[in-house]
Image (tube, rainbow, N blue to C red; front, side, top):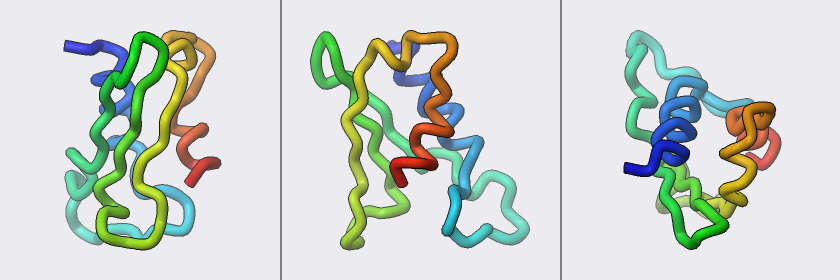
Length: 83
């Protein structure tokens, strides 16, 4: 498997909801599986957010794989700002 994708997906799932989104009451696991992260080339990954499927909001973001490799990069903060 792709360790970079799995790690990013794990952190994104656990950090939901994001600013401006409603909190799911009574279900600590409501956001598990919300994100899908996968490599699209030797240099880039895609982050897909199922929360926005079927809406007019952007649901996919391309991100450089090198950013996911960087220990100082926080994918959760990056996504919160992008969203």
